[in-house]
Structure formats: structure tokens, C-alpha cells
Image 1 (cartoon, rainbow, N blue to C red):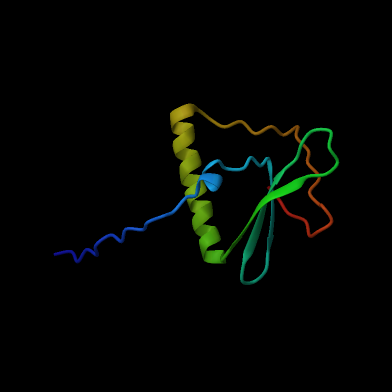
Image 2: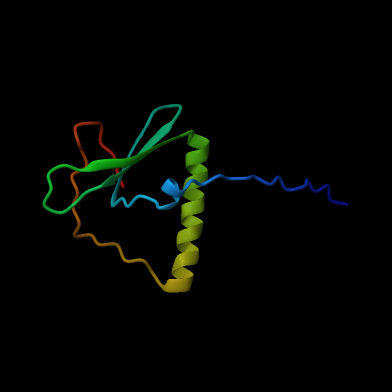
Length: 103
């Protein structure tokens, strides 16, 4: 007989401001031995300055879980809507005066 743990329910509060979301078209990622920092940035064509719209700081364990969840969701998206094409022609500067990152 399997010993199943009851699922824990989590109540999540989402304010109206956050529910609207922020558009970002670039992510810069940096890390230390204890955390990953992901800056979500909005770059606008023709403007020399980009703005960080959100900064998320995560433990390495949670970052790996996020990566797995993104992979799973991309796979399900592509099964439903077709392959996501990557536009190799877009070149964003990858250094805004801080340490380099990739998106």
C-alpha cells in the first residue's frame, strides 16, 4: 500500500498591478555561488537606454526548477502551436556596464 501525502494547497495573492504584467524582450542573468539574479529588460528600437522592468533573485535549486518548468512548457506550447522559431538576426548588446549575461 502506497503512503500518499496529502497535497498542500497554496494560496497565492496577485495584486491588480502585478496581474497586468510587464513586457520584456531581453533577460540578463548573473550568478554567485548562492544565487541567480535575472533582470528582465525592455529595449526599444532606436533608444540608447534600456530599462530593467523586474529583477528576480533565486536560489540555484529554484533556478534549476524554473529551467525544467520552462522546458516543459515550451515543449507543450510547441506541441499545441508549432515550433518556436528563433530569430538569429536580433543582436542586443549583452553588457550594460555590469557583468555579462545571456538570454
